[in-house]
Length: 545
Image 1 (cartoon, rainbow, N blue to C red):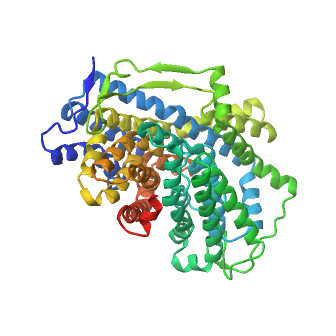
Image 2: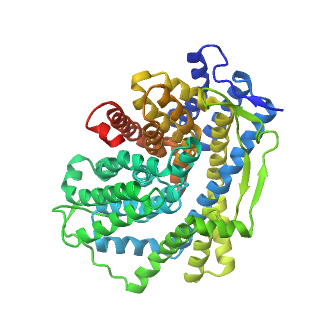
Image 3: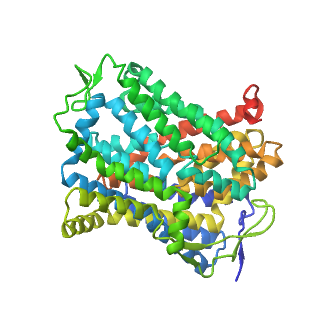
């Protein structure tokens, strides 16, 4: 039996919007203010979403429950699979005492914690995002920062803030490719527009990140290094996105930033060192690394293997080969092609696909598991010892996996019930200010779904339709959905759970949310102002052509 979504079931768009927003307020409110543990907040959010979908928006009970199960399955595979195996790799390295060596090797480049943060959270995190996406960079960088002596809240929050600049291009351009697919717009035109919007922010993020960590005064002390890291990243991101496409914009810009920063630190040093041990001013710039080259290499080896595998797993040809070996596509019964989106969200009634794709070999988490197993062999773990570590890791992250499953179940329920579209239509009523609020719609989409790709799929078509109705450039607003979405990445529940798990700060997700929320909203608002200027104010309008 088919079912068509209704975006104004109450007859009042204001009341319908308020109903659609209830699951969001329940989830974020219980996390941030009632301080419930994440798996309990997620369960309450899911329950409220199901209740609103069924009672408020008329979704059949069977379809609602099936959609929630579909989302939960996606939460476990591939996202939960990533979390589990990244923490497994971390536990393997930590079990051999390698994080102490890793910390010492980084202090061999610089002992300044601000610069270590820049190298790991901004530079290396952007590389992992460009290669793998799906929460991997937050898990990896937060784990490394903990090993370097950062506190759990700092490691979690700062990793989330840093994971903004490359998110719009995601894993080898996936969000932009998905956006082109749902809008029919040219993928290179979208890539170029996102590059023009995001490159400026890529230059700002290093300054913002260090100011959030150490304050404005301490940030200005290392402004030359921040400028080198940000400008090298932003310029390469702009050039690649505008003259090549979205596929390598994240990877190449991160490599350029890391290389430029390391080279610069060999000829420049700050007057005051923010010490790794005390977090204060110390003499000297580089610590003497007493470890042998072999020890340092062994400490970095798991992360080098990880970088290689996630990069390989992101290459389309590799994915196609592995999918050819084995893949299972399971149409979701009662849902696939049986739920319709209708105007004005789409030009004509369109059936929603719902196919659970279990491509176990090409899951990014499988590549991470392979990296962990290779690392285990290199670190002389026996099969039984490695298996014991993996089982301990499963026990450790069990609540995190349940939370992610519940979060994705909530997101899928909102999507298939049309709650997301009701919220989107409310934004489109803002008229001349739509460029600003349309950008915030992308921010909200990522906050709800945990993915810039998913937000583009949800709202890309609506952005294009609204732009044409208001006489705006559809490429501008479709791109704004992706650019604004990156700022929502730091507050989506999925990423927060990944961060809390990587830092072993279970049950403190509400504190992490409060830590990053202002940064997320402020950066999203600034992006909205830029898009507003691009829409109406010369010379910013030149960036649209």
